[in-house]
Length: 318
Image (cartoon, rainbow, N blue to C red; front, side, top):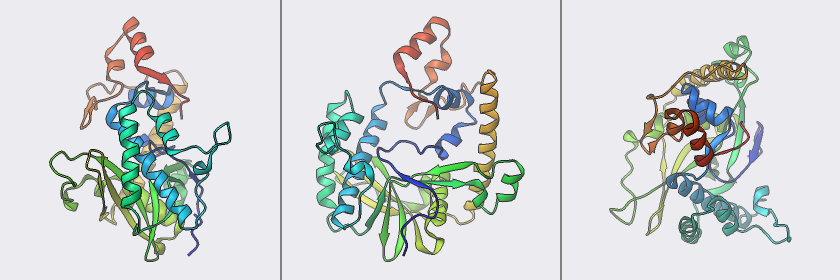
């Protein structure tokens, strides 16, 4: 099997969002949130701990996956061989400390998890093909929407997805996504109930499977899996299948097309200096707490300037 992707790709590390992924597109209907994050480039100065922990565990698990590539005789991704200015190799601790500045306990926990995970995955059932590989898909490559995408002038627009790693088992490739979680009720993780889990209708997971098929050929792809990483001690991990509904591929393709179209319109309005439509009250709270930007939306004048200056840092908008 040729393991070189047939579509554009890049290898990155660190968790977080794909460049123009489903997460970004799903933000488009919440125009203020989108404008602050993806137009003005405002990100929280100090990340929320639950999200930082997820990033750190992604870095640990991704680094172990790259180590397994080397042991298996495969060339690792470029980031794995990066050097410091003095010529010494960048270590896992270096990567964790850079991502977790100001959170030494979380960094130490992620480093300890790496020690556990390195030992626990000896004899890993999957051969690691690539950790954190971002795949780029042109809308015109999706036959269900190709004609309409071309009519709207969107057929060359690119949407990305990034499996946390791609594994090979019994001649089939799998996209595997890390989900870090806690369980204070026992040493392992709660029973996996496929019918109840949120991921099997997730546009992100469904599009990821579609991108893998485009990249490697549908006949070579076994599907998408979830690897759960337990963040609290005793550490634990497991791997669970996703039964993604086949009919959802077309549904998600149309959803993506319409969101890309809507994003184009929103960015054009922002470029003209128009204000985004208010989304206050639509998504201010979610399962993990408050929206990052709720204090921005609720503030005015000097208070607004203070909130932006103290709570956020400006990154290059995407």
